[in-house]
Length: 115
Length: 112
Image 1 (cartoon, rainbow over the protein chains, first blue to last red):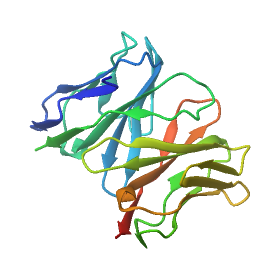
Image 2: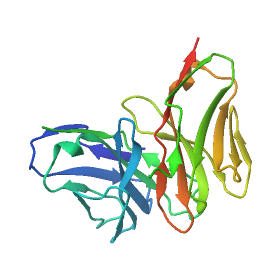
Image 3: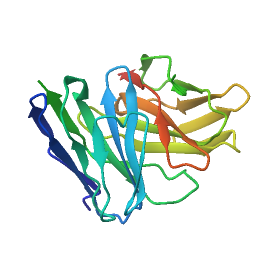
Image 4: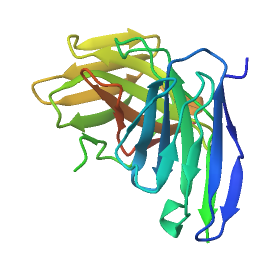
C-alpha cells in the first residue's frame, strides 16, 4: 500500500544544474499534480496532469517541465536550478472524480536546496 | 493576488476546547472546498470537504461551515486533542477545472 512515492527525499543542487524529481502512484489515479511549499506562501501549484499524455500549467510553472507518459509516473524536471527554487516539493494524486470532494493523496515531499 | 487566504498564521487552544480555523476566498467560481492537515516532514492529508451548494459538513470531531455570501469557510474541531496540533490548509477547486488552490496555512497548537 505505497500510495504516492517521491524520490529523492532530500537534494542539494548547485545553481545551473538540472535534475528530475520522481513521483509514482500505485492507486490508478488519473489526476496528478506538483506543488511547492514555501514559508508564508502555502502550497502553490506548479503543474498538473489529468491523464497520461495531458499536462497543464499551474500558478508557478516557470523553470519547471513535466511529462506524463504513464498513469503511474509524473516526474518534475528542473532544467537549470536557481536559488529561488529552494523549496519543499509535493506530488499529489486523485481519482478523476469530477465532484472534487475526494481530496488529494500527497507524497511525503522532496526537500530541495539550490546553492 | 491570493484567491484563498488564511489570515491567522497560528492558533493555540486548550485541550478539550473548540478550535476554529478560518479561511476566506475571492473566487466565486470555486465549487469545492477542502481542509488538509499537515505534520512536520510529512505530506498533507485530506481531512474534510464541502460542496459549494452546502453550508455544513460534519465528520466526527470535524465540521466545516461555508458562508457563500461572505466567501468564508471555517473548520471546527470539537473537542480539540493534542494530536490535532499541526498545520491546517484550506483549499478550493474552481468549477470545470482540476486546479486546487491552497491557502497559506494555520498552525494549530493544542495545549494539554
